[in-house]
Every structure is written in structure tokens, then in C-alpha cells.
Image (cartoon, rainbow, N blue to C red; front, side, top):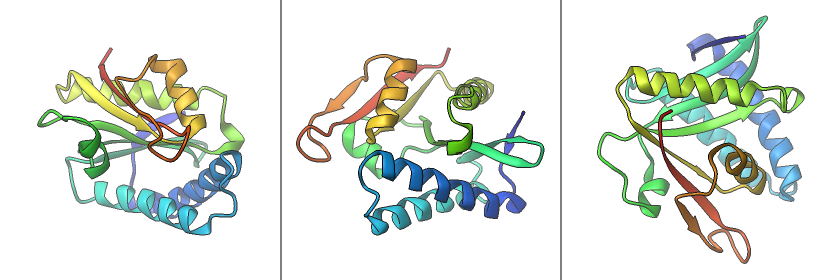
Amino acid sequence: MDFRGIETMDLDKADMLFQACMKDLLTREGFDGDGDLWEEEVARLNKAAQKSLVDPANRFFVAEKENELLGTIALQTPGHMLNSMIQVEPGAMEIACVYVHPAHQRSGIGRFLFQHACRELKAIGKQKFYLDAGFTSSQQYWLSKLGEPSRLLENYWGPGKPHMVWVKKVD
């Protein structure tokens, strides 16, 4: 499996991956009838991928095997949402846009992407990262990998639906 920066030629494949991932995620999360949320999230992910092609402060990576895009991860300047939740250090990076195609989940691709993203952070001299999650399944995954969140925003998405934020040192 290869880990590399996204290229213009990858954008269509990335869009298809985002569509598959969001359809699967929203169905599992009970939002399968919310087409607006699906469209907004796919558009947001596509915008992040495109932004990385022109903004060196935002890096977007793909995991690829035999010309098939299996997953994505980004290192980006923390966005408005994260900045509204916690005090973000200047120059900090956020790990974001972590998606693995539903057909390839639970096969180590997420771990592969995360390990390579941490190597990239080290290579550019970053000592810590921020990561946030609002979807329950995403929260469960990151709880198992990163432990308890640094900040838990109770009922952020409604009763019993928190948002979680991790601030972690790069290992």
C-alpha cells in the first residue's frame, strides 16, 4: 500500500470514496434520510482535498493500492469549528478527513494512514496534533486508539450526542 499526497488526477476517485464513506457512515449513524448532510459533508471533503493542491499549509494524503484509492487523511490548519471548541496553539495542525472505503474498513488502513500522518507531523517539526469527532462510530474508533478525549462537549449535537476533541503529542 502506498501513502502519498493527493494529486489532481485523484480528485474524482476521492469524490467517489467520500460519497461511499458518507453514505455508509450516515446510514450507520441513523442519518440515512438526510441528503443535505450527505451533500454538505462530501462537498466539505472535496474542498479540503482541492485546497491542499494550492495551499502548502494544508496537506491531504491518500492510501492507494493497485491504483485503487482506499482511504484519506489530512493535516490541516485547525478550522473554525475546532477553534470555537478549544484554545488552539498558533501553528498547530489538525488531523482530519480520515476516511477508509467501507469495503476496506477494519483491515488496518486507518492505522496505516494515522501512523504515516504522525510521521509527516514529525517531519515538519510538529510536537502535537488536534483531532475531533462528532459521529459516534468515529468517536469509538478514536477512543480505542487515543484514549479519553481532552475535551468532551456534552450534548453538542443534541441530547446524548457529544463532540470529542483530542490534543495529543506526536508519538
